[in-house]
Image 1 (tube, rainbow, N blue to C red):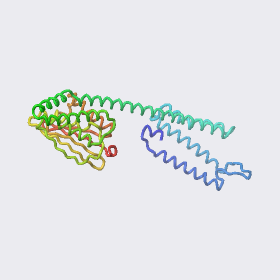
Image 2 (cartoon, rainbow, N blue to C red; image 1 turned 45 degrees about the horizontal axis):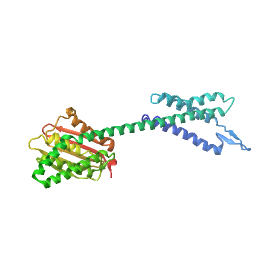
Image 3 (cartoon, rainbow, N blue to C red; image 1 turned 135 degrees about the horizontal axis):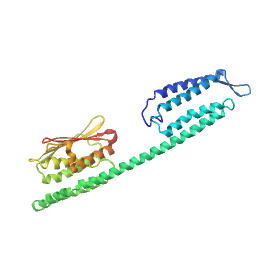
Image 4 (cartoon, one colour; image 1 turned 90 degrees about the vertical axis):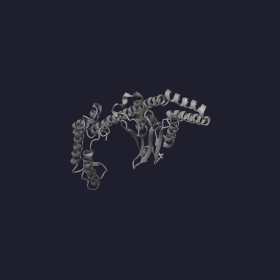
Length: 340
């Protein structure tokens, strides 16, 4: 068990050895009735039985097997663990030299000392494992914090704010009612966006979808030739905040806004036995996936989404694109991690 915490070795040797010792245990039980290994005389004193040598045989085989197993897994064990585990064979062997003069106390003392050393080893390993886990959690928290900062910077880009405000300014002189509606939508977008950035837990997909629709409503004030098609088959699951909206924003900005005649964004969800799948695709300009990191803005946004999906939902994110045909982003979320 100790070795398997470091490397998934086979249980075969342990199972064989367990059967070996089970045989010895059965012999001990039988001795309670026939005195084969031990018995108690008329005065109640313990006495060795006529086959007591079998006990020494099993002791000897046990120590040899343990010694061989420690050497077998020497490369897996640390130096400290190797010598500590080795003591469980070596110390009892050394104590056997005193059997003709003093028995069985040295054997008991050596075994107890070895077990104390092993207990100290296990305690140290557990403490180290807990410390390493805390370090990993702290590092993941740091990465998530950096990710939230990157999200804040990427989601509140000045050019987007300026464009929305310019659109509202234009509506104020043309259609005051639509201008008021646009201001209300813009307020909802800013509130939901800042709220999503601060959240450290997953949110209902309905909330993320509504935030995405709010964003699209603002963009469609400027880009009237961009349409959206929905195929939402399921919404009863949780998802990382700002996992859908940034993908739709990339589709608008890099796929459709620069395409003559605009295009369509397709948003869908579906589920299978194990997972929920979210797809965002467009029939825009597309790009070369192998070199997309040349555009630092796109690269940061996509990596932020990928990191949140992996760390918060244990999910996966894949993006594919064909130049002049469009782009597709697929998020796969395991059901066991996202059920409401």
